[in-house]
Amino acid sequence: MPEPIVLIISGLLLLVVGAVMGVVIRAIVVEQGFEKAQNQAKAIIDEALKNADKTKKQSLLETKQEIHNSRLEFDREMKERKKEVTILENKLFQREQILDNRSVNLDKREQNIDRKEESLEQRKQALEDKNSKLESLIEEQNIKLQEIAQTTVEEAKELIFKRVEHEMSHEIAQFIKEEDEKAKSEVDKKAKHILAFALQKYAQDVTSERTVSVVNLPNDDMKGRIIGREGRNIRTIEALTGVDLIIDDTPEAVVLSGFDPIRREIAKRAIESLVSDGRIHPGRIEEVVEKSREEIDRFIRDKGEEAVFEVGIGKVHPDLVKLLGRLHFRTSYGQNVLRHCVECAFLAGKMAAEIGEDEILARRAALLHDIGKAVDHEIEGSHVEIGVNIANRYKEPLAVIDAIESHHGEVEPKTIIAVLVAAADALSAARPGARSESLDSYIKRLQQLEELSTSFEGVDQAYAIQAGREVRVIVKPDQIDDVLAHKLARDIKHQIEEQMSYPGTIKVTVIRETRAQDIAK
Image 1 (cartoon, rainbow, N blue to C red):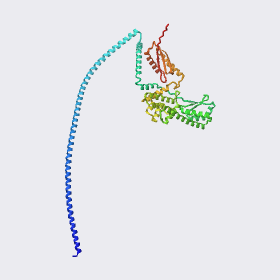
Image 2 (cartoon, rainbow, N blue to C red):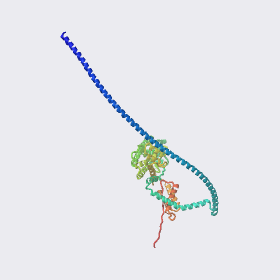
Image 3 (cartoon, helix red, strand yellow):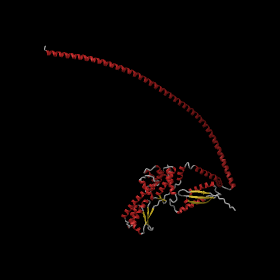
């Protein structure tokens, strides 16, 4: 065969032999890897079996331990339950015994009550018999006494009562003196309450509103110009201002009548401006009235801001400031209500500072206590009710609302601030010169005070002083001793409270003086 063919065949043979050898070698390698994998798998399985056995044993031990613990806990709970049940059984048994004993005692008491009722019935019957006998005997004795003494039963009673009163008067006066001394010894302990509630006793307030204003004129001819042709000027003024103009025989004056003091003031300023200007006709009246209204609004706001600044209570709602300014045009017995509120604010603040209360809150409550008077002629209701509604609307503190609601004593005060405001209100109104009073009624009140004081037995003289705020009573020392002087002061006080009407308070001072004289020669 040719050499190339031999080479090809040899190459093919070598290739076949190599492939066979590769397959054999691969089979040998695969077999060895399979055995190794089997060995590893067997080792893993053995290890897993060991771990599983170990875990099983551990779980079994934990389970047994939990069962044991649960059994112990159950036994403990059962013992406690048994103990509780035993205690309850003992208590029930004791209660049953107590109830049995009570039942026995009740039976005994019922028997005793029955016996006592029978005994009481017998005694009642006996007493009734005795009473009937005594009444008949008393009647017989009364008849005999009347025959002997020639006096009636009423006269005899009056004599006995007078004698008892005379004998007991000294003891009563001594008791009053001791009680007064006891009260004075405890005043330091109760200073706050005594100061607040004692000052509240001043509370009296009577309001009398002025309803007219007077405008002075340079001459009587100006009245005709104010009236105008066919009364058109006066009708225009009345329609724009809401007040009535009274033009009568009063020389050089026009009277403005109306319940609203703001409208009266606007009308007064407008007429004064018209009179000074000289031009009086409906068109000019409208301009002047509008200008006067704007001036009054500014004046009211300024007055309110001055009051708030003077009292020093901090921020106040602008509407409340304006309402305070309106109080400048309100009076009570001639006392300006805005000045009255400012006075009350200072008084309440001082009292609050003395007793440790909030001074600023007391001033605020006192300044706003009469705020309802600013619009009480426009809104239905008393100035107290209106003031409470206003304070609630502007979210004032509860102490301020309480002070407004209780300052006239219509409701009981809930805060110490309200009590202080009521006291300050009474003090401001009752101080000498605060409110006007007619001379005749003033003199009559002083005379009545002196006459009432001298009507008591043993009184020598009585003098009303301090504008009727105090009465000094001079007694006869041989008839009234030091102890009876206390009783006399109290009796005069009660008589004044019952028979007289007066603002504020009246102090009663009883003076007893004994003088011994001799002459050396």
